[in-house]
Length: 145
Image 1 (cartoon, rainbow, N blue to C red):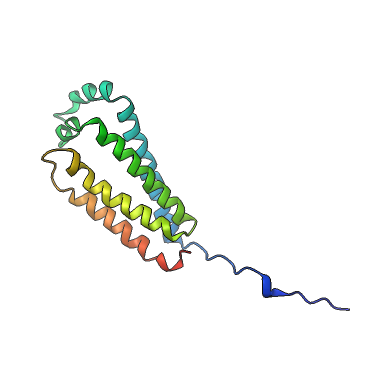
Image 2 (image 1 turned 180 degrees about the vertical axis):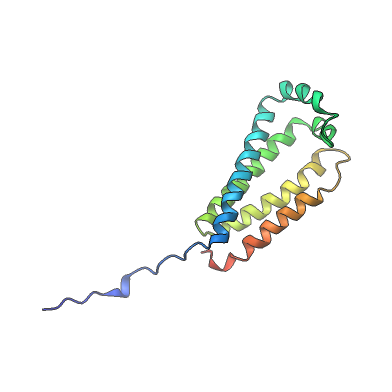
């Protein structure tokens, strides 16, 4: 007697992650983790790090803005980069909510220095890079579950 398999209860195969989405997520993992780590380190050693950065104030344009940032700037940045990493991790697993976490964190990160640092100019390049990543992630939104 021949047995028939009943395929009515099989789960559909999960969608395969496109290569571009994989690359975007890896870049986001790297950027968010490194930035989050550096923001956390500056926050945790704020009183020791800022005087050392004074030596480089003239060598790097815009360093005076970082030196005038309050300690809360670095804590908030760490939290936002953690949300960004978490969102990328969810998108890696093809979850729609990850896109929302990531997009919200990136928009907040672009606005963060203008909120905390007086006279900080609009970060156009940062905004464009964040917008590019958000748009590229959004192109994959339809495959997220």
